[in-house]
Image 1 (cartoon, rainbow, N blue to C red):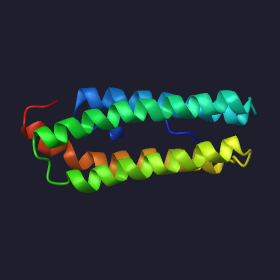
Image 2: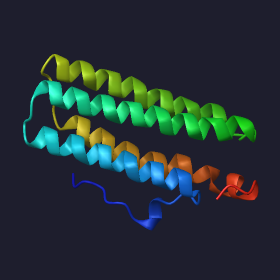
Image 3: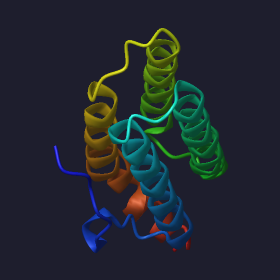
Image 4: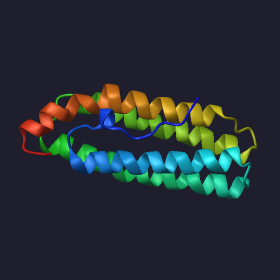
Length: 133
């Protein structure tokens, strides 16, 4: 599966979150490069941790606005974030036990594409109406 490249179709109409999504994509690309170059287990685990940390930062920002403005789909959106962390935990275990495959990258690409296009896009109109752009 080819790696995703940022384009305006990923924009959720909120500059802060668009910048976060671009940064998440950078972390995914760095992980992809490391895996394809068969770099050390320690390095790959470090990159997964950086991705997880940045995702936590981004998800916290989204969830802050969702609770502040009573976003009606907050609970479902938060579940999607929790599923992401569960999968990342599985992949960290897979790397630690040397069972990592390109499935990690396929998951991250699919997650990024589907989450932004199908989940994050839902809040665009809601937050734009609240003056968040």
